[in-house]
Image (cartoon, rainbow, N blue to C red; front, top):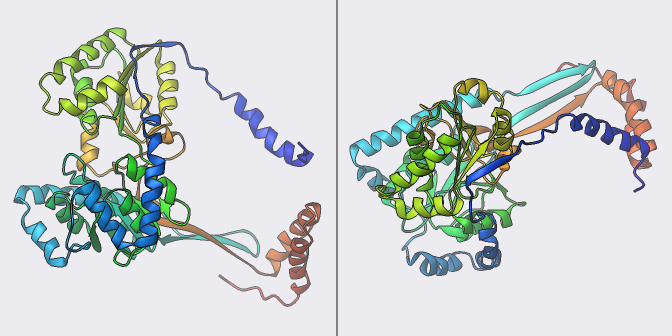
Length: 451
């Protein structure tokens, strides 16, 4: 109410244009529907996490020690991993494990460097005497949370630490649970972490956000974790940046009648073994393929060694949806905006060009999510819970700030000041009007100079 007519017209016109682009999804039905919601399942955590953050902020290292004992059943002699401990962890790596880690580091570094090369400083002169530009500035100190979890996920530190080093961040610290596998320390070291600390969970996020006697406060926090870590990142965001709010992992497959049920089931279960709350699904135009995949998942679960995790994930959060045509498949996929999206259709590259909401896209049956998860070079830290509708995944650009600047000479002032004076007066901002008009009186004395 009371919106100025000019402002209303400015807002309304693009809304009118948008109306024509809204797509109505065709009817579809579930062969299997999820029975739980991964987002609402974490609602009760907020109070517990709030208490942890407050304790660490107030009591620093002492609170970290208490929470390590309580949650991790550990009492490390030192929070920081020493240089000798780092070197020992690397030396203890089995040779092939080290070679594989270094292969993954090289692939992620190469791709991050290629991305970094596209982020160039900018200087333009859109009007004579009006100079605009931006600089690409690395974030000063960043913190990388490295999850412990059920398995030693050696790719996790690679994905968060390596891009930070490529971006040129001044200091990169890593936090991982006290009970994390020693190989995780080794890979943090090989990835380039400047400092490594033995602290996990929400308390690690608190330590990086607020700082303690031992752990320095950072400017931005990266890395996925469990529901407590995610909630902690949500609560500290503001004074400290975060990469994203990462929910449980997700994989969806888009397939037509050319899809292979055994391949699709294998890929769904490969992701489901991450966590009992993993969201997995198939969207298909072919009911027979959906039914075959449903049967194939059950068959493979019978022999999968991680079925104690993958089975509940499939039971509680898995789904198979049959849609009437490719347009409906695309519409539903863009609504889901899956973290990992595989395309198993007759023309996967053609369909891929029509998709717009996902974390990372895997085009064709040869492109398995596991390759990106481990070592092919794209980052596996990706948006979940529908966030793919408005953001992409972690990349080297997440570790920099693109900051604008401007400078004007007399010609530039002559070009922009009149409009700025009129607009300020129109808005009733007299101080703004005076500041804009003041420069006009200097016009005779402002030198015209080169950038």
